[in-house]
Length: 129
Picture 1 (tube, rainbow, N blue to C red):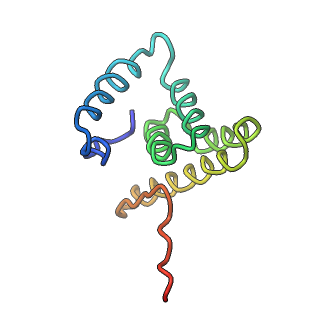
Picture 2: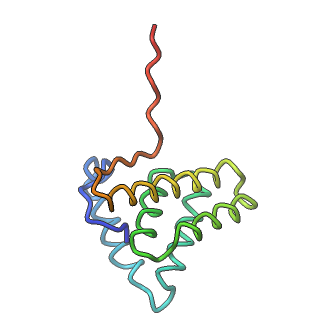
């Protein structure tokens, strides 16, 4: 669902049962129910909810999964940001647009053989004292 096999996240490493529960339930039982709701619809719903919640880390992961799988295009995700801005507000929808650009750019670099470096937020430069 998220596009690639990943090492356990900090949340999963910090709470192994939580990680297993998420894996078994969300990705093992809910996402596979494509006879009820196809993956593309699930992608759009998930991205919309994560945008509304301001769940930046999870949003980055699901945008990446949507683009890697081909379930959604960069243009469709961009249009989703414009649509969501009317309902959730511009600051939250802006984050979806940023995540879309960062993930798309990262996937292009990966296709060209570069190392991945996705982060939810850019690191701030240390201020000299």
